[in-house]
Length: 303
Image 1 (tube, helix red, strand yellow):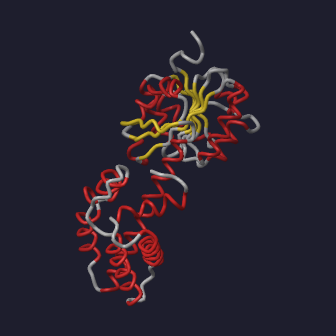
Image 2 (image 1 turned 135 degrees about the horizontal axis):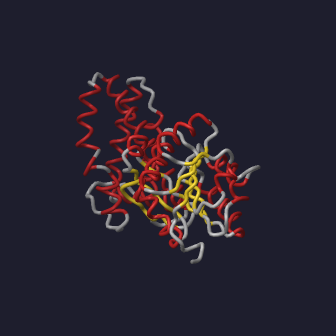
Image 3 (image 1 turned 90 degrees about the vertical axis):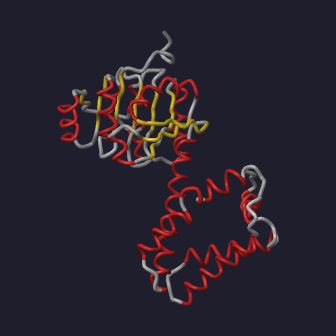
């Protein structure tokens, strides 16, 4: 059987931290032959005692004879170091082996790593996860994967042991790109909500009342991805019935309210500037979902 088609049975797992430990434990409990490595020897020993895995004294020892190496590390620079650095696993991996980076890494770094390992017959796929420690512990992570489709299929039993869903994102690096963008959206939403609550508190509104009221107004079926991006922007229907100029006006009201309360509102100021600029460029009477054109023209893409 070709080394690029045989089932994955032996797995090296690098990074036995808050996320990596429960993930590696699921692989061991599922029946994979797991070897673990971490910079903290005591963590490795405890893991081996609990789950019957093998302990590697070095990265190259971990790499000997494994079908796949999974990394769960702080960033792509650390990943690159353990793969290509002194005593890195690449020197000991057999052709046909797979490096699976499940860290949250820079997608450009992932592509570069893939290009460097390709001449050695080693494949790279990126498979970052969403869900955090709680979901790592109960194996319900959502996994976003980038890379060669055949390589991903070889790895599917691993992913099935770790998560509840696998999203195929595209070429290598695509999973890491989507993970970073998802965190960007969530990070923006969090400080956006915090800014609104602090402005409202300054005005005299109760924070709990605001938070609970904003759920039906801004979350669930009223979230812009579900309510506007999918049905109106990606379809180019632009049929919400709300004019761009009206939204720009409403955002200006929110920004002026913040200023009148001497509230810290840098997001409101910038968002107001963007909506006003879009209304001036595209016209105030077009459907407000056409604001996508403002970004498309500036970025040189069409959604």
